[in-house]
Image 1 (cartoon, rainbow over the protein chains, first blue to last red):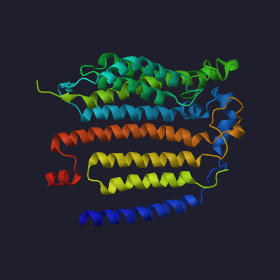
Image 2 (cartoon, each protein chain N blue to C red; image 1 turned 60 degrees about the horizontal axis):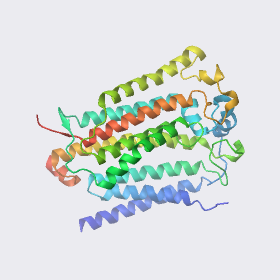
Image 3 (cartoon, helix red, strand yellow; image 1 turned 45 degrees about the horizontal axis):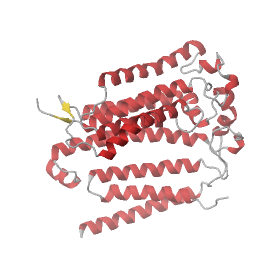
Length: 238
Length: 116
């Protein structure tokens, strides 16, 4: 009885909230041109950043500092997962090996999944995607390895070092911009050096967007793999 | 021309479905799934607000001029929101793992009762 009452109450609340949301959105016309700042970005993106993908130009170039904060949030989250699931000694406790389909498929697919992830983050300034989806794709490859083989573990030392180095590299790229152009994360490769000016729309263009997205891709990939590792292992008594 | 704002209703529906799971379900994992569904609804809402009928993705190649592209800012915002969503989901899931180890159950009411 209680649960029926609760469910009914919940549905009534939801209907009221839904009505409010629909009322509010009825004033926002769908599919019409409401751009203000977006128009500026679209018109100036190629001359100012060299990237043809306006979304990644906004994320990495115009709002690069926010993205540094975003990477920091991911880092804090992975640290938090590590702290919450901390044990003195952790080991993988899975007992059954993956099925033959899973193991064979993993052996075949892992290199291609990693290649695809690298493709996504290197071509961030040309195609949809960028460092975050690319890094997540690379972490998927490690998740596959974890599921297929009971004894597999990521190379912890190398991953921790990579994570630290690429995290510092992001700040260093920003600081070089500060030294050359006068503000943090100034796009020195495109604005000062003018590299790839006649190459817009091909791989070697876009200023520092491919470089920063490679950094972000490696960082996200290693961090998400670390989260997977933390969640899959269980503490054992010594 | 699409005049019906199906995407607005879709996103409202997703938010409501997620909220229903959060309000009614007793299993913590199902509540977390509800939270993720709500997040998807909000993301869909943001992207559809930036949509302009008949225009293409904001990638300025192959004849797409600034007059033929949709608003890039909501998409950049949603890209950020998805990443933060992944981070918070990972944190919440590891908190759930700790809860299960301590109490041996995922039922919210039982956990509340065990705490006294």
